[in-house]
Image (cartoon, rainbow, N blue to C red; front, side, top):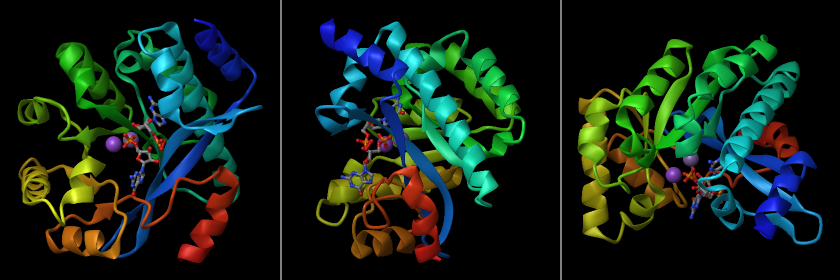
Amino acid sequence: QVKRRRFARAIENGELILHYQPQIDMATAEVIGFEALVRWKHPKEGLKAPDSFLPLTEGTQLETSLGEWVLRQALTQLGCWQQQGLVLPVSVNISPSHLLNPDFVPRLEGLLAANPWITTDRLKLEVVETAAMHDIKAALDTIDRCQAMGIEVAIDDFGTGFSSLTYLRQLPVDMIKIDKSFVRDMLTDPSDLAIVESVIYMARRFDRALLAEGVETLEHADALLGRGCRLAQGYGIARPMAPEAVVEWLQRWR
Ligand code: G
Ligand code: G
Ligand code: MN
Ligand code: NA
């Protein structure tokens, strides 16, 4: 309770920041966008990872407050980058109860209207399968409406839920992100390799874009590319970085 109140103040006090991790096409080395990842710049404890504070928000109003802060901040950052001539999309993680909040779409429309110079194709959303499992109808409706606005939606941590196959069939998502746990062990564990290969096959059959998370080494990159998975994100490409570091990173990368 105390911790939760402290975190609520952190949002109000501007102690949160977004870090950005590049997503690339391994076949061309082209940067296709950045994933926004929230951090808490705690005045005493330093930079805190989301695993230390996201659980505090779960199932409370804070989950939506945090989610809205992240969306607003990502749009602000897109505006800053645009002024510097950088026009790449940013993917934002949307928690299940934020996605299923009936106000989600109207609030998002409001945020976009407040940033009219940011086109909707520059914002992408990442949702986890469990969001759909709570209320498939509501999830479908929200995803449809976002896509109708021109916002692409990705399914995050794919393969870690329980009903991947059925949900993929029903969910009209634009992109599938293979969870990093399968990618990490695909070179050593035949079962994980089988999962990765199955997801690659499925993405192709369902005509969805596919991105592998947790690409840490050249061996991972080669194994994925050789099997037809071109898009990737991971420490082997770049760690999540502060927004000030992004422009310089891009110059070095190109
Ligand atoms: O780097 P990383 O430690 O950022 O993230 C850990 C977990 O926190 C991941 O599952 C990631 O999806 C989640 N996460 C990171 N940033 C956000 C965010 O802004 N909103 C939500 N809902 N989850 C986030
Ligand atoms: O759950 P989600 O995919 O949104 O979270 C991304 C998380 O994965 C973040 O915590 C991010 O810092 C982390 N991450 C990104 N690349 C790598 C990687 O190559 N290896 C590992 N172990 N984690 C990664
Ligand atoms: Mn994600
Ligand atoms: Na993930």
